[in-house]
Image (cartoon, rainbow, N blue to C red; front, side, top):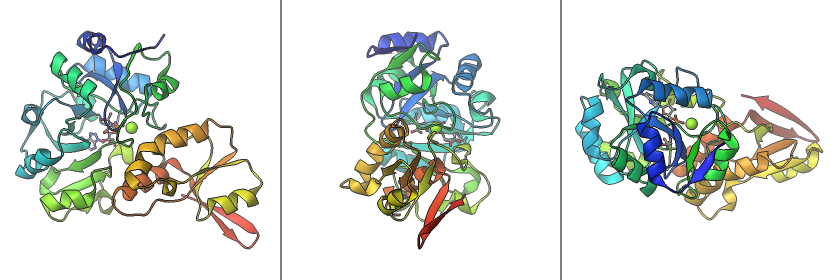
Length: 315
Ligand code: TXA
Ligand code: MG
């Protein structure tokens, strides 16, 4: 049976024993394990049914620990950390051997992040462990942003969920790579490219290049109900004759709020018995880039109307 608790001591003791537990971060809930314990990390992969080629982010308490787990750290990492850490930013850096291969899926790089949620920080501080933690959903599914959502993903598969309320950010961290003397965004998040470039100067998106972050797989965050992009969801819903749910990030007062609600709204729609879900894109700048990226990967394509007929463009 999976238990929800507010007691960090229970979680610390589980993690020190080599067990896994779900924990709140400021972005989404994570499924944590001692990153230095291969058996514990294996439990994460098994529980999520996560493919072994998808590397995990390692969470540490403070900036000073980055050098324990990675080498050749460029000065710009520290410049960014000074402004954004603790917070929703993950640095992909050259890994040190102390990090087991299972964590990094055999890559010689490691994703490191200093989260800001007070309960996660308490667990890091009190355990003294670096914690490997992917989002606490089954692989390919929607990331959970409340303890209840973790339960609906992993009920019976884990013993404990640490309840830290609803995640303040709502979408996963921005992932930025510093490998090969190049700075690249591998995953967009609430810390935007523009904000990062103010510190680092011009950087590129990984779309222009080969090395994919596996979280960047085309289909991800997938609801069970088919989801399509649509220019005018309300009109389309009338015409298809299907019971249709609509996700409109534009209904919120700003993009930060839209990100906060995104995964919960998608999950609720998915659980509401609709035959089809439609979404309209957010404005494609700043945080909207991260929102649209999630929606695109969650969906299966676009529905387009011409006159009285419509077609679905898959992709
Ligand atoms: O906000 C977050 O980042 C959340 C919370 C729990 O911290 N975690 C999270 O983890 O989203 P996950 O495993 O769902 O996504 C991690 C992403 C994946 O796309 C993974 O491929 C990428 O980070 N990643 C991790 N280590 C990497 C590495 N060494 N090189 C390239 N990509 C890496
Ligand atoms: Mg994930």
